[in-house]
Length: 361
Ligand code: TXA
Ligand code: MG
Image (cartoon, rainbow, N blue to C red; front, side, top):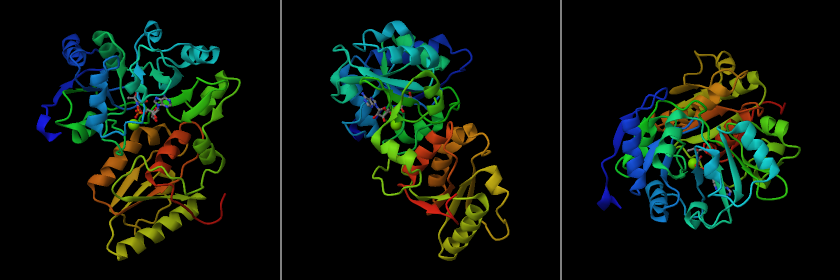
């Protein structure tokens, strides 16, 4: 693989007015079967021509992605949907109407024109219409749908800045369009509409409450259901976003969580370990800074508005890696609105290890 190392060109693009020459340069790479990372409102995507199986194969190789994990096809216009899917259910129509363009991915019956490799052989295909001017301009200029997973090395946090993409994929892809930081910060919500009842497969930028306002019924995927019904139950197998430090979630009433974190920081530091904390402003204000001196303190914003936690989360997890921490203690957050998506990612990063401080609330 190292034999065909590429020169990765980084192009800055103003999201307010993407330069058509830069967009066309990147689109030409895609049409030739190459790989281009581009910003979306959620995270950076690693794009290839979704209708070219050889190009799509390169995505799996560049990311080290397991071949059984299907990709999302990105479109810019509703007219592009027909070539990708066989059927659009009334529920799917409602969701597109309400949330496209935006951070919502719909799983629909796959049209035979879509190469099987995009969907890892499944009879369905995931489709999303992103709401980012650079993504939209690139898809239109390429003239084809773009298969695009998050532009990280498989197993790392998704990239929310071009620098994250470069650090993971330099030498493995042709180009990166740098449109600045991604607004949402966690990936799109994935809803399966191929069966009789819509099923939430991954919480994301469109909240479960948003979906419930539009759909008469939404189910949750079994593993996600277990998370939501028993939000603090450990022992689930996935570790998807795995920082090099050990991550531990600390749950409970704020004063108890602060007390537990202080105790753990002191204990770990006595053992010569490097400790990081990821906390909201409210929890941070309860920590005794004389007793509790972590090696890294990451701010998740306010508990009252978790959009900031979503925006910052993946960048903070990457910083924890850079700071060579041994252990990261993260505050468990309320699971309402975007909090559900943030906690889903944090639980995975923690390998589902959750410590209850004080009595469960
Ligand atoms: O926000 C996002 O969705 C970003 C940006 C780039 O659009 N993309 C992204 O892609 O997060 P990726 O590949 O990292 O995550 C796609 C998720 C995976 O969990 C995958 O298993 C699921 O969507 N998925 C894709 N196709 C599917 C299908 N046909 N059936 C069920 N799940 C599918
Ligand atoms: Mg991903």
